[in-house]
Image (cartoon, rainbow, N blue to C red):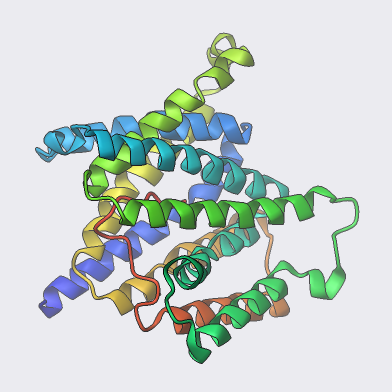
Length: 307
């Protein structure tokens, strides 16, 4: 692998991470129920991936197989829960806190490797697990002030962010073990599954009749969730992963939460305090430490759509 390839790969991953960091902004500005946002992300994301496959001559990768479709349906169902939990967590806590909590996913992968596949945890990884949980506790701000007054949904938001990260890890594990579909094919069929699973939601709530009354800006934010944060981000991040080593990929994956935190501060003025920043840094360092020996491998070769 040449320096030019590494440099271009890093640039692609940084661009993808910065783009993903704006996801919370699009969700907040759209102002829709989490399930509505998930439905349109699946719908427009699937359309964007189909267009990408057509434009790059990779349409044959979308051809379903029995084994591939079984995995796609299962992981697509988990993806709906993952996105809905994450989106609700953003609305009930903040973009920064929900995103940081959601990025516990590598920790669950590490623990799953120990519990399900008999991988040795070891002292270094055990310290990483402990540090990640300690960092998360600090990042929530609960050590400083407890549950925010009048915001009982805050605790539920944190719980949903954790649940979303667990679902993300489950999707990752299932996707890594299948070989029937490429990353593009699997992500497309995950979006298709999500669209079908949530098709009842707009009809049940009478949304089709209301769509004509939505401002054009609302449609723009919802289209962006699918086209930008699923289609374009997919192309950037996976293209970058193919040109980088494991260690650098793990490090660059933190561009996303850092960008989300910065945007939350810049747009909404919801800044983290010193203790919370220390928690974010501790959690990031702990996850890097725990996974530095390839305990948590990237998912470049298998289609796992990030948040």
